[in-house]
Image (cartoon, rainbow over the protein chains, first blue to last red):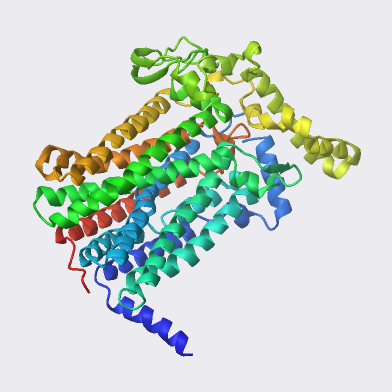
Length: 70
Length: 521
């Protein structure tokens, strides 16, 4: 338990005593929000996962596309 | 076969990928190189106990941290793009891309995120040696992360260690070690990381030179220059060596890219290396839109020597690769397109036969398992898409390939001189007397980034029209979206990345202006 506490305090003190790091963390969090919440959810779906239920259907689609490009 | 593909969609999708990859690459090389420079500086501190070295280490560690924080996760977008814009490609490459990227993710998470915390939070909390070990492990972890993505990229340039499964339309890894240790992967990794070391060295000497010009932090700046110059000199010599190996590998596996890099149209023995030159516009009357030289400075027989280690070696030109050269055993574009079409038709027929003609299916399936058939036909799968198209379609943009290659190489040799003189003049304590040289060092920082981006332009545009060399053309790999959708995300990325870049520059400039703090605690 004391080992876990030590690790927690190590990180806790580290984050509390940051100077430049605080602005960097703000930038990181905003960036991750834009990437994973806005871009990933609204603009970057996994097309094959979204449009097909299983791998067999995905394979069939890709073979059709590769052998008859539209 | 490509008549119905929306070229505007392909261009926007490529543009978007290029934009994100190039922005991502603004952050990566500094992380790779600076992590080692910081580790070396800290090693000197631990060995000598001199607080000045601690001050030096902590300052460059802060610059490393800013760059790392701003750049982290910018590469994730490339993975989003694989699933959305390049879904057919993502499916086609199967686990070959997935395995290295998964290892990269695990490496990055466990090694970098664990040890980077000790690096920044651990001063005075863990022992000096443990802290130093964490700094080294962060550097090694960052560089190993780069290994996996570069292996994946090298596989696209030279697909080896795989087997195509025609039932699933996926490539399956047959040998992890062949993928990892192919000469393309080894050279790409070593060439890219050593180039990153030069960039980081130039950033360190450039910023230190700026301090010397302002007569600030003199000891700090001089010591930083010495460490970075030695590191940069080793990096540039390694870059030249691995670049030489890479060129030989490209000549073997991607001869069209190699010919375009040198704007070599007619193959020859005793081929000269163009040291510098300028190209004329495209000759519209020529079937392959040939470009001639306005002028060129050539090193006689050097190109043959680079490729074959002998001036007698034959280096094929673009014409040989388009029209074939039976004497040299080079297949023509037409022949490759015919063979590729056989493979494409076999895949189509196999799918049709799967449910209603078991005999035909078994016969076709056996072809895909037959190494001779694979080597004769499937090897040229991608060329089948260009059947009945003008041969110019399989030639990369010669001007871009030529200028990006010569820019990268020219700047590389300039960096040799830069690192050499900054080391010599620092050691004999004359660097502060040569203010012009200090200005050159400062202004070399953007040149280092320019050289890096030129290298990527050559690697990626020089291999067009292929997304996977000879097997899958870029045009056939793109997802059927509307080009308007891709344009929206292109501009969104431009805004997000530009904002990140401005944030990085603002924070870094502020830190540089503040300068190193006392590090004696």
